[in-house]
Image 1: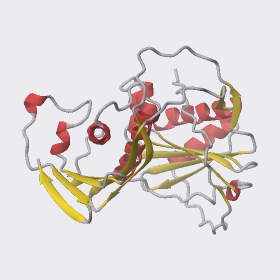
Image 2 (image 1 turned 180 degrees about the vertical axis):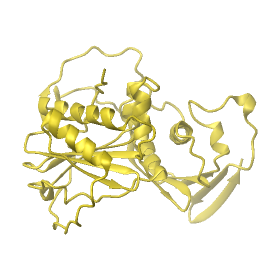
Image 3 (image 1 turned 90 degrees about the vertical axis):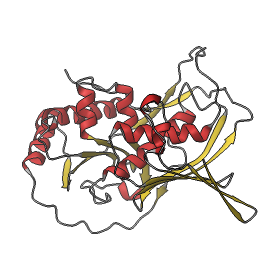
Length: 322
């Protein structure tokens, strides 16, 4: 049985509908056996003309279509969840990257003064065609890449409406999908691990071969940094349990937990920058053991090093050790 995952759709608010000069596409490298197997599977079983590329250990899938991907529908009213806690903070901005062997995050958070619980009664959802295409691609992945010996670490799946210039892109760690397929992780957790983007550009229109894509080999630390940003946004804007007291601790905890989920220890430190309060903090990997919902048991923790607070106030730098 194949697993049909709930699709978390991203609203097209502030979508960048930009014009860009089409670049010259390099000749397509010879297909690997895996690419041939996957493309043949899609064509034979689903009549899908997809284009694939292998870049390092990243498997790229381009699925162009003239059919619409998204549509609007009336939202079914639902009673308020008595267990859901109201948000106390607004996340105005969050960005993160991996550079100089460190995770770097900056954010802007404000106390929420008033919550708008009203709804316009409209939601954005995938069309029936999109949902079918999405599931068919995942089924093809299931039938061609489940062998642990498959030389693929990451999959990038770009589904593009080449008539309107709209694209939905999904990037995920293949081992996460294998685990979800055998219920090693819940479906909701798998969805949190998938990087989901919706973009629009006139350069997508008529692009049947994927020349607008910038093919690259996804690296684990870069993938984790983007996933951390996505998880933090979810925690503040969609979770039933948004941060209630110390929002900084919630942000640091999400970052720490994400490194644990992937057993990732190949970094020197975490640097955070609260751009509103001018508060900057640095954490070593060992200090992150004290943060997160899935942190190690207290009995197993021993403090090594210092928690360093670098605070800028009135042009002066104050360093506080803890």
